Image (cartoon, rainbow, N blue to C red):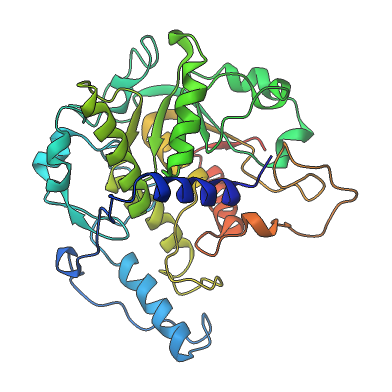
Length: 353
């Protein structure tokens, strides 16, 4: 199977070739940024060697970490989970990596959900007794780590009320370790991911079809959901299969990384963006949606392949080995794994693998 990066690159190429009339949908507008009340202090010298370029990148991350609403995922206050007509009417700006005015969604009013209550768009019977924050009882987040192979948790995963999976849906042949159900599929919104999700969804009976949730950080993700809603509008129907996560979910995911990295100072990657991974977004959604959260396939096993569907390793390694095609400078998987362990120690979730 091609790597995720290769699939996304091909999807972007296909999208660019077939939709050249679409320009960048959400151009950056600095005037839309809500400034922090106080500027953050300089990063401590021990966190970064203060070369000009490194200092600029650290300051960029600090600035994002100091934005209003950026709080850790463990914060108790509930946030809206999916972007809705209600949010479009209530907030002027969608504050992700490149803030833009919510009026850009105006032509898709018929396609947006009425409310940001995620449990109301789930299949009938799921989370029926939920109300308000923690609308569902038990939720399993199933990542793609090779750590899944060391145990057979498939039945345990399927026993949860709601099953959430990030990225590509690949369960056939691995049912005993990853389970069979998917209720929510969270993915980065390039055209290839949207098409793959819709194709996989159509093959299932209506009672088993998952809901797609597109991550909100990138303008590419936002552009893809707008194109999807545009196609739905041309068919004169609402969008009931794919939704955009709210910018508040982005703030909670980013806030957790900020809290774990000295407000962005301690970031050894060669990029200033500091973007939460899709798996991390999925965990943030589960913590908001569910009373009890279980994580599977979101830790490191140095004796297993990076992905459970990858080629077996000939021997164990000393540390996490990320394949070159999966090593993205905007993510820090080891730090995210550390945050999961901390959340477990604080009783916020249970980490199985």
